[in-house]
Amino acid sequence: MTDFSRRLQDEIPALRRYARFLIRDADRADDLVQDSLERAIVKRRLWHKPESLRPWLFALLRNVYLNQVRRQTRRPTEVPLDQVFPQAGRGEAQTSAVMIGQVMAALDGLEPEQREVLVLVAVEGLQYKEAAMVLGLPMGTVMSRLSRGRERLRRTLAGDSPPTTATLRRIK
Amino acid sequence: MNAAKRAITEQNLQAYVDGWLSPARQAAVEQYLAEHPDEAARMRDYRAQSEAVRAAMRDAEPSVVPERLLRAARDGAAGSGRGWLVRAAAAALLLAVGFGSGWTVYGVFESPRDSWFAGVPADTELLRVATAAHRVYAVEVRHPVEVRAEEEHLMGWLSKRVGRPLGAPDLDRFGFRLMGGRLLPASSGAAAQLMYEDGGGRRISVYVETHPSDSKVAFRFAEEGGLGAFYWLDGRSGFALVGPLQRAELLDLAKAVYQQIEM
Image (cartoon, one colour):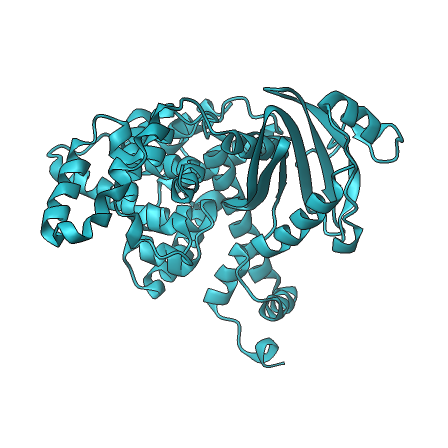
């Protein structure tokens, strides 16, 4: 197996996570990941080595996703994020599970643009310029979306608009 | 001095939350936050949010990667039988750029023999298990290890159960002290995990397992958000060093582990 393929395999968990975040359906997300991996193999010479592989793959996956969305006539139904990422068997304290449920519900309430920046930066550990590359945006835009998204999330969690009771019930 | 004097911007504060500041700038921001408790509270909230979102999205991660995805990463569309679109695109590109430079499609048809091997490569599996074990035990407050470093039988016990002599690497000069170790189940029988901690409470773990057949894989690095890992196969043993460190720092530690773990 080639070195590139090994690196690709190492990135699969992150790609699946990002795909599920975008599509919100585990099976269709894996289809998207598979399409993206196949495409990455074909296009691998376009990746310049010192760059880290993850942002390059994320940008590629996102393009495949956007092309699919454009072809669809019907918008898919939005599944709440904490159903897409269920907290099965969390062994930690109850409070932290409650906190996580509330944060995920609040995240769902953000503008999609802010939400995506936050996930790329906070969950996937992308640098700001890498996130800008994935999203095809200037870095300043990424920064302002990040800081507005964080503040909005903070206000929601502080009680300006509490998470829905449905969310609270689910994480009990 | 200049780095400390410059005004703190919102962008600096965001970078502080995400851990992207240089040490000098970091110190300046910390001082600023010490003088502005409201801002400090805001940054704490931002960090807690990030932690929660990260925990939610990462813990839900299915641990087993489907074979079809591993195959796609290995063989591209040739391995799947459903990648006609990609192949068509590749063929179109091949025509477009001319046959003399057909490198673009190389990956699609490359080494078909590889695709006959089923299952997960040993080193990918090693990385997965070692990282999962680190995530489970490094966060433990009361029971990070099963047998503490102070107990003399620790290494003898692990060596015997894992089936190879093991010495506990001394990582003192990097500021990491051995806390102890534990036994873990592995496909080959038993694996060992040694846990270390530094003065800042950061924990790294060394994972060792044995395999029935010989193989050699040089140091590889993988990174999953906050966690980095170096892993390698040496003869019948597989090793991994996992921790919340940057690549360079982890590499120095991995070299020390590599040199010392043989006994």
